Image 1 (cartoon, rainbow, N blue to C red):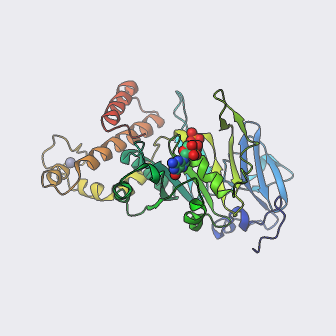
Image 2 (image 1 turned 45 degrees about the vertical axis):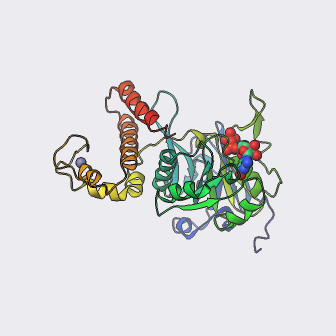
Image 3 (image 1 turned 30 degrees about the horizontal axis):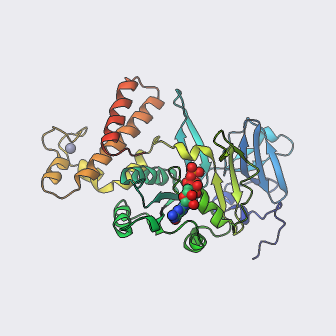
Amino acid sequence: MSDSAAPDHPTLAALGWQVFFADQVTDNAAVPARVMEVHRSGAQALGPEGEVRIPPGVDATVGDWVLFDPVLPAKSHVLDRFSLIKRRAPGKGHDVQAIAANVDTVFIVTSCTREFNVARLERYVALTLEAGAEAVIVLTKPDLCNDVAALERAARGISDQVTIVTLDARGAEPADKLAQWCAPGRTVAFLGSSGVGKSTLVNALSDGAEIATQPAREADHRGRHTTTHRQMHRLPGGALVVDTPGMRELQLTDTAEGLAMLFADLEALATTCKFRDCAHTVEPGCAIKAALAAGDIDPDRVERWKVLVAEDTFNTQSLSGRRWDEKERAEGIRDRRARLGKGG
Ligand SMILES: Nc1nc2c(ncn2[C@@H]2O[C@H](COP(=O)(O)OP(=O)(O)OP(=O)(O)O)[C@@H](O)[C@H]2O)c(=O)[nH]1
Ligand SMILES: [Zn+2]
């Protein structure tokens, strides 16, 4: 490989540098570096000249590119992102939290078990498309299922913008089957419920090296190793993998665009409803209801679309400070999700 630089002095390309970023640099003396870790006390970024520390005032998240200012590190400049995975902050507040920037591909991991749930996958796909990243659904544990083809069909039905890969996460398959998204300098992230095989996949891509994930992990009260802060690792094959606890609790936030992409057909149909704010329930002249009656569209999918739109609207509007009877609304969404077999 052409990347002959020492591991702690990687080339820009090895860190994911692209024309998109180069185009933003006007000062030739600027030193680009990629944010690899974020702590309360600041961030650590890596560039061709080694590691630099960014003070907490700089609003950078894992995966960001910064132009480091060695004289005034607090003045380091964050470059525009081509993708951003974000979430609604946990707890009572409604702030949006940046989880990871400049991710090329999100592997949405699900297993061929009872955990498999189309509504949940749609949520993750919408979120990924909204973030501006490519979505790949990875179906693990095919050995535990009699009808893998049926699940693959269901996953494929979610969107034609999504690739489906089925593999056993434990063997040699992941390295092969995920190779095209894990080339040197590519940035990937894994999303999915607990136990679906995310760690197994990362380890498989690490050539069994158990990579640098270990030092950053601590045993939790159950004795498991958990990721304690937001970070990115470099895999032996040259890809970068985001490993952050926040990825596990993603909710929809401001994903109207992603939902519109995922449910483009239904959104287009809805524009032909008689009323612009049609809720597709009791309104006259509803194109969605008409299509349902004609058997042209799948009622389950329509119901999931409504739930996702409601959840997104709720999150977005409460974020923008509008007054809602939040508890009531959240309960409504939860009830509907429960009836659909949860969606997350
Ligand atoms: N049978 C089978 N088991 C698998 C497969 N992939 C992963 N597993 C097992 O599933 C269990 C959970 O895998 P993990 O990689 O820890 O799952 P995770 O998604 O990282 O879970 P969290 O860390 O809780 O988020 C492990 O015991 C794996 O060995 C597979 O393809 N087939
Ligand atoms: Zn309607």
